[in-house]
Length: 236
Image (cartoon, rainbow, N blue to C red):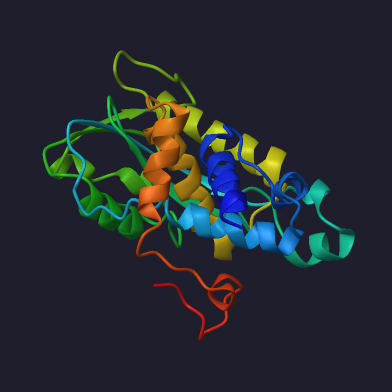
């Protein structure tokens, strides 16, 4: 079984667009349920968990993630898709430090207080931040060097842009739609960790990324009951 685990770690770590549990099950000769559990346990080891604040020049943007209606069974579509735009999807906030790493997290909404609180927790005061013209970002200039690019008018104004983070969102969405079709909100954090890990370690070789994930597995545990959201089966 160790050989199957090592092969699974290599695939999750180095497949640029991710690998589905169905494909992993076929390649490893295990059930889809087993492959799905292995997939998520490996993703857990990709979580950085740092409390260090970002500084310097940082792009900030948010997006919505959720399965496309055409990929759902009609009964599921009627239950889940009750509106347009971001309704019924999960909002995600991202920070991209230019010349550094990307960090992502689920947020309850795009309200001003939510965004300002998360920015205060994740970015040092005095840093230069770049956002789009979303009204919720107003007022950040009191603590940061805040520059805005209005996408209704332009996408780039000198160094004022959020294209780097938008490119990351594009890659993330292609991975979810292409490899996983859709991701339930309960499991979204681990998919975000997986994509951010590969992006942040993109300068490493495949072997170096593989060794890093193997080392990160120590001390991290995810039970199957925790994975499916049952109260007594959390992670440690």
